[in-house]
Length: 216
Image (cartoon, rainbow, N blue to C red):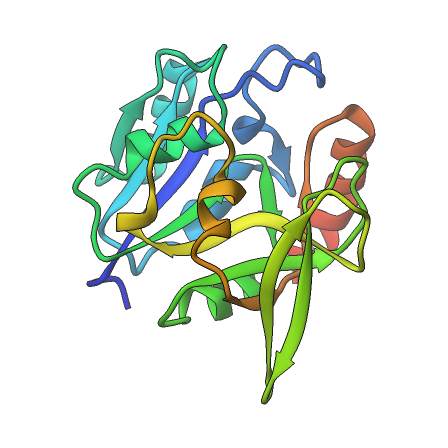
């Protein structure tokens, strides 16, 4: 499963809207930091890169307490850059495919494992719920749902940030991840159950969701 894939977890941001004083990747859900939930689902992969910036020392120590074979990539410009810059830094000398995970995105393990088995380019979608979503136009192709374009207009499905993409496509354009993917569409869609943490209310909902999902 892992021979052709590099995993990149973007965990450089400060999560300032939460006001907890540390990065969102270290928020505890069901008794464990989000970053550890990710690593538990990635045991079969031998090329895991974690992009750090804010609170880097605490992330590194937490990760190394669970797993030693990890590559840490520093985004020293985390205060003025976004996920695309972190993804670009982590993508250097990557394998054919990159699986991009946000450090603050909790994903149902069942859905993440299914996603990780995909062999081509694919994006994780969910029913639109966020305040400022990146939504998608889709169409059916046989049994699959295909993503044909992005929009800021509120549609049925939004992109979660979960992405499997050819590493050659990752170019630091100074825009957003979905902009560089847009030129490569169509991509297959994978529907996932997940929770993103941006605000204190998000965190409370994620805690309640996590107690159901991770204690099964």
